[in-house]
Length: 116
Image 1 (cartoon, rainbow, N blue to C red):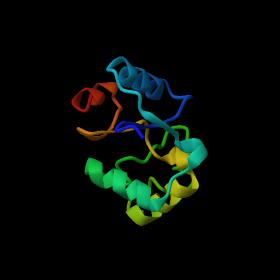
Image 2: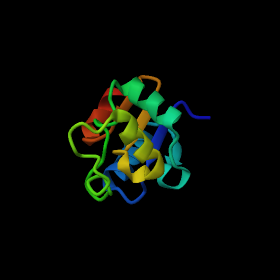
Image 3: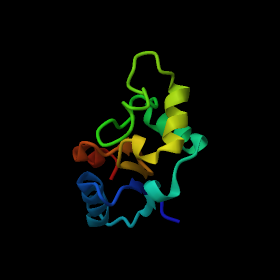
Image 4: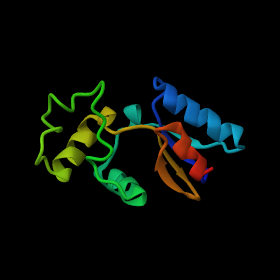
């Protein structure tokens, strides 16, 4: 198993560029198409903790049902957002990259430079 993992949406240009950058740097990451595999609460909690982020920090609104689900409203708990993320995987901002140097959201793509 690779020391590098990318939680990848192949339809996202930023995600595709991040995967390309990892490979150009000589790394062949494990590619997780989270839209197909989904998320578990434990998995997301581990990733968010590694990044020092909360579910709200990584809530993707554009192109998702976040607003329709009421997740963008003030006062919505992290637990509610986390639960929604397990039911609607697209609610998690992407791409998330895990490397031996750290775990980051590679958006903007320049964030990747710190961990490869």
